[in-house]
Image 1 (cartoon, each protein chain N blue to C red):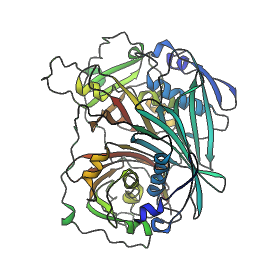
Image 2: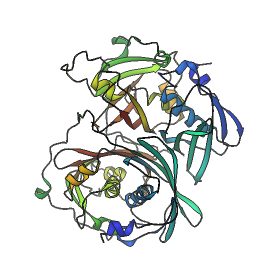
Image 3: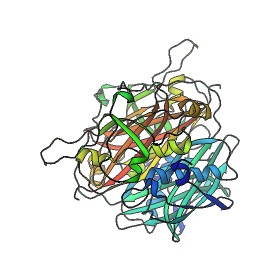
Image 4: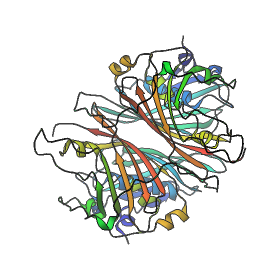
Length: 270
Length: 270
């Protein structure tokens, strides 16, 4: 079993109610990697007995730290019509709400198709060295990162130039695994926090709210397979304790598979 | 009273429960302008008796059409810590869920500040003719639109070139009104649907889910006053019935006030 499947394993003990447990394979500093948690919530919605259609969007709000151990997820179908379904969900640990959010599922009929945005020109992943893993954080070993631009770099002196707010990075599961909605959701949060990149320091930071939009159906996922995706992540602003991040995930062939936006908490003192 | 204040008027009949009513001043084709509805939900969260801090982000899911008449909004505080608060909300009409969503409020301390993204160079609003209002839709009269790029244009023949997926447009309330979080939320959804721009036809379309991120506090809003904001809206992809949109709202002085992303339903046949 791939680590992401083990780490997002859920038991439905009642319609729309799930039990899960944090997994060490995706451990971050004080809890699981947030993208893995977001993916677990999306997976719960996908497992809801009334779910039809494919994930179209998901918003996940990180209200409080998830700690090591068991948790429950409740998924509620708020509304459905013939082609679209709306769910809300929450993750509960020790009787307290830790995560909230919502997801939309939709049928994806053939329609007019147009992609005005094009993938930036970057070096192929094979021509880039993978990022070394300087820390023992488990989740960093669950992905391969090959930075074409904006690799994280510590600033050692206050007058060192600020780090690049943008990263172009090839990413894939490690070990390799065919792409699905769960792994795509997780990957949409694999970009290291922009305040860390810009400040070049391990200041306090954390995703507060992320929204990811899926532009794929099953055929598109199958076409992406287990190849690298190109991730583009950029902060537009860091201001008054928060930074935004807009991100895109592209297939190597230049199809936009997912786009995402998030707001990140940061403080500038360690 | 400004129309936006009249149209978002709410009565709190119980802690976190509000009554409101649709208003003709922001009427769109079959219901109120979605941005106004999103702003009404944000306003309800702001009026929650436990609310502290300032809006940081809001996600609004348009589950079903809101129709003319009364509605209720329920706001629930999911979690709070010293500096951040998480709310979820829903709008109910005739005992059915019409809108769901969530909002985060946060304290905005002074921290390191950096805006790597810069406002594009555009003509000043005074040098651009306001968009004429070719339709009687009331909400179009509640805003002044001055397009520097990507004004909507109907395509009359199938071989006409596709419309621009990007718009740069100066926008302000009409009549003018000092900016606040409610009007900023509404403005983040004033960009006409990208499928309409690209296809140049009044095909069926509608916002499914929007997330808006606020980069301002009270001082920033006061500085923006009732001046024009520059809106940038762009679709990256139209595919299988849905289109994304990323948007930004800038002060004339070049400060990024809000950013937003949404997913839009469309069909390519009338």
